[in-house]
Structures are given as structure tokens and as C-alpha cells.
Image (cartoon, rainbow, N blue to C red; front, side, top):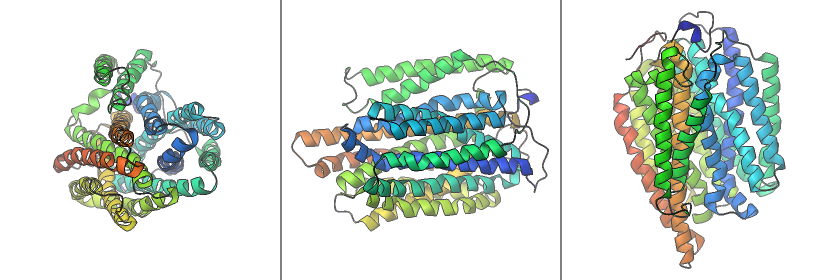
Length: 489
């Protein structure tokens, strides 16, 4: 890739200073990311309430989360190209405007179908935001300070989940589900106005044409795989027992075609998603860990509110409070984890972090209808500590292992795999839970008694999957600190 394809071009910074214009853009992007993630995390607690209000089964209502994540998985692969083809200001304003539109649609939605459509529009804007933020940080922040800055990203992406479930629970208990979007909308509008006033263009763009075929292949590949996974469990597979496997296989075929197309286009530096990022061993290990952690984490976070309300019998506010202390702690520790990474490297954080994540999930697979709330809170705190110790080193070590010209594509791949993993985890765990719930209710069991075995099986599945990052975390290294050229290391 030639130097003029770099997604963001900035004045050269010293090892200790950050360009002021770039720093202002980072803070604007942090605000926008906070709004988007707050919106995403309010939905998890709301799903059981929406299922009742709208009269839909759990596996259908869960698509308000799964479709959101799936849409981001389709959008994010295009961001590597978009961040090079358009200016920072253009990309940001398009993303936040799309998010505002989607939030407005959700606010006035008369039923499930329109609400789902609004969530898809929201996701289209959200999907651009995190790659834009991470690519900007990699270009603006000197290598030796990236852990600290990624820790601030960790603070934002943790503070929003800390507030989201609790805010959601209170709003649902007092105002109704529409106010979840009624509260988010003005905050998003303020972010849009701030961006229109203060967002700066951080450099040059390219004129390479976008490859429509790559977009189509990407959507069919990732969409097919995640949709196929969502059909596993029996109640989604109405077309026959083999349908999920067929859908996944077709998605895999399109994925192979997508990869072939990118390998062909990147010879001319025209790829939608430049796959030369996979020449870095450290990057590959880091993104695999991120994808697997996301699969287990998002699946668990989607299932947990259902478990807390349907099995443990908590109301939405109490369910949100169970998640609050751990999420707050995770946010507070974000900058601390960043400083530890800068001074000690990734393994000091990743190894204990991934162990805590897997351990918390194994404990969740054993809790029952009479497990006290304080115990559930402690387990969630342990998981949050593990996540805090995982995200900052994974973000920093993965992108820091790449050439500067590949930052936007590396961020796109990382966020794509994170979202695909999260969507797959949500779909699989909810399918396991729903299958057991329906089977138990068909036998005349109450909802708590019918749902408990399914929740245990789903959490145990997530815990087993979470053992993979524990092993891989020993192999992640801290990249060189020049941040400019790592080649295929």
C-alpha cells in the first residue's frame, strides 16, 4: 500500500505530545462512541419487557440486539475504505446523522417491525464510529502513550454499559420503553451539533472507487454465517434440521469469495478490506482473542438479563443494578490498565483477565433461582475486571503491530470480527436458552424452572469457549514503539 492511502495524515508528533487538533477530534469521537454504546446496552435489559409488551417470543425479540450487531458486522468491513476515501469530518457527520435518524425511527415505531428497522439504521451509524475512533488514535497518539489513550476508550466503552442497563431498568419501570430512545435522541443530537461545529479534517483522501461486488460478498458472507448460527436451537430452524448448516455453509462460500476478491484488489491497493493485516502474527493472535472474548461476552450479556428476570425473578431495575458495580469498576480501571500496558506489556493484563472471564462464566453456569443478588453482583464484578484487563491490551497490541498505512483496515477487521463474534455468541446462547425454555414450558414447568437448565447450558457453553483466549493470551507480545512500520512481525 502506498503512503498516500493512509487514512489520516497528521503533523508529526514527538514521543510525548499529541497534536491538539487530533486530540479534539478524539474527544468528539469518544462522546459519540459513548452515546452509541449507551444505546446498545440499554436494549439488553429491555428485551424481556419488549417481548411481553409486543407479544413476541424471546428468540424473535432478541433480534433487536442480534440484527443491530449483524448490521455492524456488515458495515464495519467497509470502514477501512471509507476512512481513506472520505474526510474525517464527512465520515463522522454521516455516521452520527444516521444514528440520530435510526433513534428517531425507534422512538415513534408502532410495532416490532419498525422498531427492528430503526435498530438497523442505528447500527449503520454505530458501525462506523469505533473504527474511526481507533484509527484516529493510532495516527494521533505516539506509540508509547497508546495504552493510556486506549484506556480512555476503555473508560468510555465501560461507563456506557455501566449506565445503560441501570438507566434502562429505571426507565422501563417508570416511563416505558419508548423513553429509552427519547433519552438517547437529544444526547445524539448534541453530539451531532458538536461535531458539525468542532470536527476537523485530519488529512488527505484517496479517489479509489468503491468495489460494490466486495460489499455484496461481505454482506452475504457475514450475514449468512451469523444468520445460520441464529437458527441453531430448533425454534429458528423451521425449514428443516439441516437448514442452519446449509446457511452457514453458503455464508462460508461467500466469505471465501470475498477473501479472493480482496486478495485480487489489494494488488492494486483498491481492496475494500486489505487482508495484508493478517501478515502480522501478533495482530492475528490478538484479533482471534478479541473475537472469541466477544462471542462469549456478548452472548453472556444478552442472556444474563433474561436469566435475571425470568429465572432469578428480578425486576428490570434490580437486574440493571446487578450489572452496575462491575461496569463502573471496569470503566474506572480503563486508564489504569492503559498505564500498566504501556509499562509492562499485554501479558500482565491478558492472562489474569481471560482467566477471570472464563471463571465467571463457569460460576454463572451453576447459579439457580435462589442465588442471592449480592453473589451475582460479585460474579459480574469478577467478569468486568477480566474484561478491563483484556480490551486495552488487545486494542493496543493488535493495531500497534501494523504498518501505519494499514491502521484503518486493521481497525475494520478487528471490529468486524468483534461484532461477528458477538452476534454469533448472542444467537447461539439465546437459541440454547430458548430451546430449553420452550421444552420445559411444553412439559408444564413454570418459566423459572423451565429456563434454568437452558441458562446453565448456555453459560457453560460460553465458559468452554472462553478457555481459548486463556491459552492464546500467553502468546501476545507488545509491538515495537515506532508505530510506523512493523512489516509482517
